[in-house]
Length: 458
Image (cartoon, rainbow, N blue to C red; front, side, top):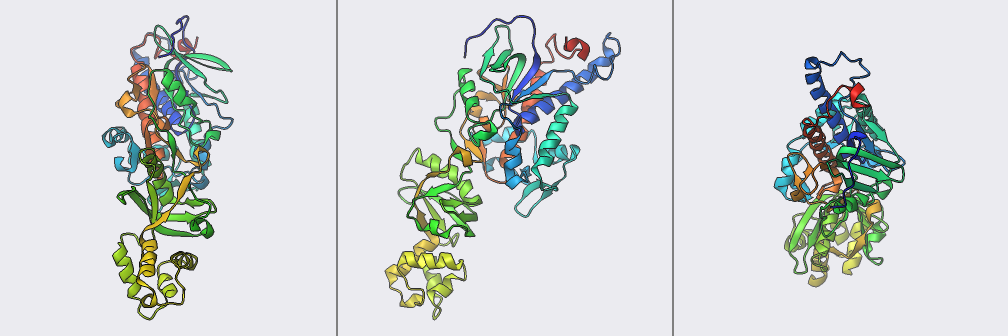
């Protein structure tokens, strides 16, 4: 833990939340709402003269600090600018990183139903699409961000930006000093919701991970982009199919051919390699597996679930059909011609006219085409970060640090990353909710907390 400094005259805030993204705004809103509820309980029984509405609007001073010039960028760009708020079914199996049991414990505190009800309360109606994704009916991410900001203002959360936090220093008698080039604030509790490293222009450039390490936490050995497009070798045929989209099975295999994991969904060929939901989902598994086994590779199956033998049999069943005509039953013509070229087969031949070895090479391309992936497009194109602070270092009932009392964390800074489809937002809402209500609850015993606002803000 970093050096402590003397704790003198008072605090500037009861709670400082670092990061005004999904997790940070959720933490601040629920911390303030919980404080109001507690404040309302004690006001009728105090000897304090009845305060005016302006004096009693809040029971806690909650400040949110964000270093980005524009708040909520990740919310605004999510889902192609529509903001995929959550998914209709969310399970711990939809996430990687920390253990499923740990992830489930947090998710269970704020479910999909809770999420839908929360946003409905804010005036944001959600619709479910065929994919299971939930979007605002306006199809505009601004609807979501504006509702969160309005909800924060309604409970007098003080959002300040761009104020980049560069140090967090524990105070001798409890609390923290949070500082940057703009100055400093002293707070009784701090919530670190600064994100990981993905989309650094949003403000989540990894500084939060550095700050938390200085406070005694560890960070996973590998912190890598997740939900990120993959780059194929310059000569690979996938690049020649740029713009083509189709459903396919994308899988990671070991050097021995063992299947590590796979996803079947829409896939997009691009000028640099591969993208689309199936590829984004598989990306963290391929790149993380390569940290252990450099020979791990990627395969595409255009006949999901089919073996080499089944694909070969399917070709032979074409009888008098040309092989190109047969392939067009399942594949776009551009892809069909590219696979035939890769196998060295003329498009006007029938499958029975093709040499066995060449036909089986085509069958292999249909059910397990290897793609030489040379890297990914990096954090600037990643939707989320894989890796971060292990959940084992957190009290999952409260999201308080086990290493640094009074410090809370939520969202992407933790070692949890989900599939595409609203899962990462659901993690942010859930972990932010738990952190928010827990910070306020932890302050109930403080002699300086839950006083009427005219005293609390002196």
